[in-house]
Image 1: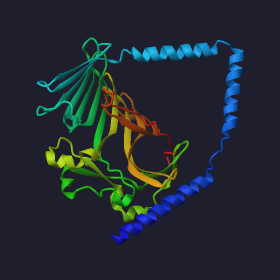
Image 2: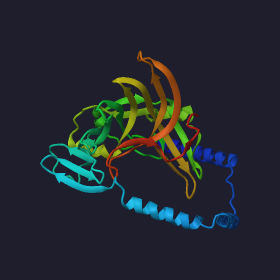
Image 3: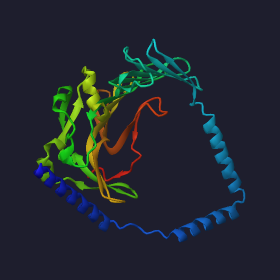
Length: 337
């Protein structure tokens, strides 16, 4: 225990020094607030003198935008619950239907996140557009269909154990060893354990953990991935369900039923550090679109494009009826380092 406390102290000291080094090498640009306000006022005055109607047109633009938002065809028109079929059906104003399907033993559709099995999206003509598959309420696959019902692309996902901690020595602090039977193991490269400083410009890469720190905490290179189609006892899943997270592994793109392109994803272990108020450190997993592979007619890789951009998975909740992969709104810089 004393050895671990000593490591945590050393780790914190290392992270603070790394952050201080970044601050020294990248001094914050001071902004004179009074001068900035004056500059903006002068710019607005100049624009109005050049075009007296600009203010009126800007107000009209925002009024129209607000009106459009209030009358968006993608807004919800109707929501139905079918307890017998274990379905929740959303009908949008444009007549698109999105159906959430749950396990047969679901009793309460208002509190059934872990029992979500599938989400289907149908266009106004009743044709399937998107099909999402879940394991214990966590995303495993999304299929996107063309108008003729052929497959356009498929997103595949793995489900990771991701408990946020403040030290690489505490990654599996609350993980019960008897739960290992539900997981398979994958190893991270040392280069995929990265440190980012939270700055006014986004999350700036400041370095990797030293090799000796990683070797002293070998679990920092261990990823626990939920086994496919495994049955988990209810009392067990309650112990770690909130620590599970879906990350994409690959997206396959099709044309005439042949793969023409693949997006290859990976996860990194990211330590975010900041001293904006008090020093804090937050370690978690993050998804990265690593590269894109393009295929020729012989199903051979014709071209590889390195991407290395952080992504996030938007879940089907809080007004989002469908999940999706998108680039992370957080700005991570120097992801290749």
